[in-house]
Image (cartoon, rainbow, N blue to C red; front, side, top):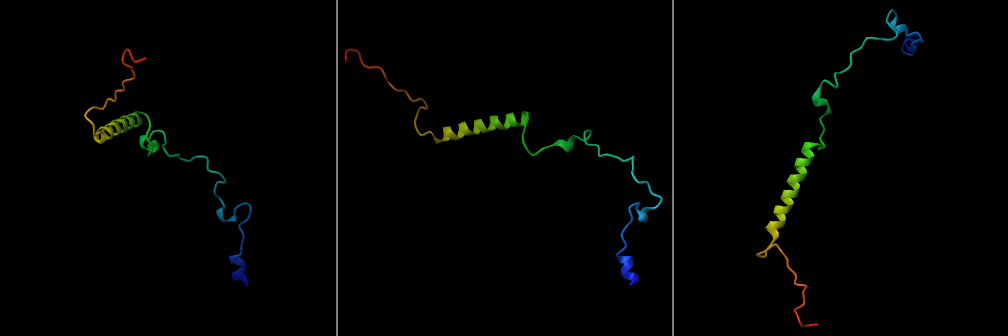
Length: 87
C-alpha cells in the first residue's frame, strides 16, 4: 500500500520536488531572430524575384505563341473600306 501511495503522490502547490530553486527565471536568452537573415527567407516570391519571374513568364508565353503561328505574317489586316462608287 505504501508503494501505491508513493506512486500517487501529488506535487504540492509550493513545488516540493524543487525545494531551493527559483520560482521564476528572469534571465533567459532569446534566439537571435532579426540578426539572422536566413530566418525570414520564404518559399514565396516577392520583390525583384517576383518581377523577374513575371517577365520570364511573359517572354515564354510570347515565344510559345510565336511557335504556334503557322501563317507568314502575325498581322491580321481587315479591309473595312468600301470601294468608291459602290454606295
